[in-house]
Image 1 (tube, helix red, strand yellow):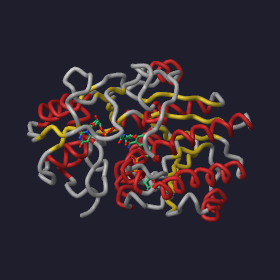
Image 2: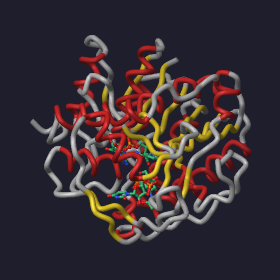
Image 3: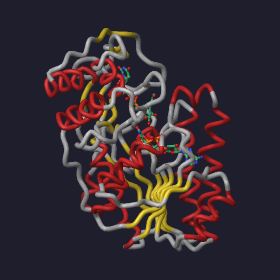
Length: 339
Ligand code: NAD
Ligand code: UD1
């Protein structure tokens, strides 16, 4: 298939481009580079043995720019990663987050339908479950309250895409609810490149291990979990990438609306991850216990059985692989994509 990848220069996008090409698909990237650099796409080409991926530095809110891309290419489907994703920043700048994520997606799906492309895979998040009513979380688990504007945009865009599909059954909409993506390509050439102080656990661990941060703050050790620290379903970004390739099956089979949890089904606490990281890499991660972080929940991991049953997809990598590959990326690129 020929796939439009919005946000393709970012963390998950770059890894997905590789897996799409390995599976024989053709891709075109649209990204405004607000949270990424062109260098990431250069490295993707290198990893693919020199394959040139057409790239447009276009904001998805730019209707004219996007329409031009559709005039130059006939797409079978769109994988829609483009969006702002920093939870804390979304609390400080709600309007910017709603504007970028909501308006961007409105323009994108309108331009798609005007150009006869009605197949979309959308990057959603486990955050839509709020404090989950069922553990492990199945797709039937009711959606919950999102504590921040970023999460709200994911939840609302799920509703928008569901309504669009309901109104016009020619659409095929796949909502992938990612759990906690970490890790990096095994080459160490591409990986996660957060701006400023990382919010998420693994980049904070790797930056502490490489000496950029003094110590990791563990946010709370009084949760009702096996060691008191928060439990999450960490998934290797390469597994997440192959989930998008597998999700194209739901489009090929014209499933209409389909929702999948994309996780491993295993929950690890913050201290489990610190221990696994130290063991896998032979480096120390100094830490101290801090108060709970506002908006955090105790436990979040999924039942990924539906993705296996319907898409034939399941995660291949374990926590040691994730820790090894995250570290390999960080130590080879202490400043991310900057030279
Ligand atoms: P990322 O920031 O690395 O990638 C997103 C890309 O979108 C960036 O390259 C950015 O420049 C681009 N972008 C943002 N707004 C744009 C716009 N208006 N027009 C064009 N390009 C724009 O993030 P990621 O971790 O690769 O996440 C990809 C998607 O998955 C996002 O939608 C994110 O919300 C979602 N997601 C991520 C996680 C996670 O933990 N990383 C978890 C759940 C869902
Ligand atoms: C967070 C977001 C979620 C988003 C996801 C991926 C919140 C409340 N949730 O999820 O909306 O979809 O990132 O971007 O921000 N931790 C520490 N110290 C740190 C960082 C994290 O102890 O420096 C702990 C957290 O308390 C949590 C676990 O590590 O228990 C994972 O945190 P994180 O990586 O931020 O992911 P989530 O909170 O699951």
